[in-house]
Amino acid sequence: MIKQFFKDRDCSTMVRPVENERDLQRLQSLPDSDFRPEFKAQVTNLRNRIYKRTRPKMLNGKALTGEMLLELCMAYTDAINTGSVPNIQTAWSYVCQNECQRAINGCIKAYED
Image 1 (tube, rainbow, N blue to C red):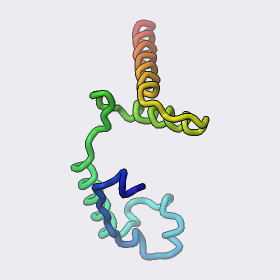
Image 2 (image 1 turned 60 degrees about the horizontal axis):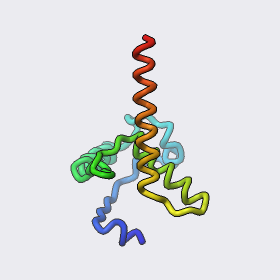
Image 3 (image 1 turned 120 degrees about the vertical axis):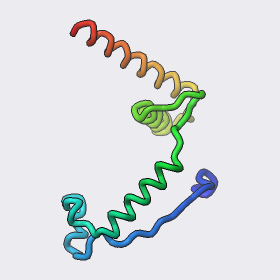
């Protein structure tokens, strides 16, 4: 299924971020300065490659923001978890309603300020 949905794939190998095995167990708490220079360069190259190839997620001809994409994912997940089939139109309506509500709340706050 992954091959079907992701026809264009790219893989990267990277060096270990740190030499010390103990440090490897606690990467999330290490400062960036503790990482190997080769690893940091590979991360930078990978990020650049991702940014060059990535296009905005579009739905009904409109680019989705991060919040809109999150809401869409949540609507799909809720549908799947309740045993129903995700409906793109219903999920899109949900996203639009939330965007409108966010805009209304912003306007009310601006007016009150």
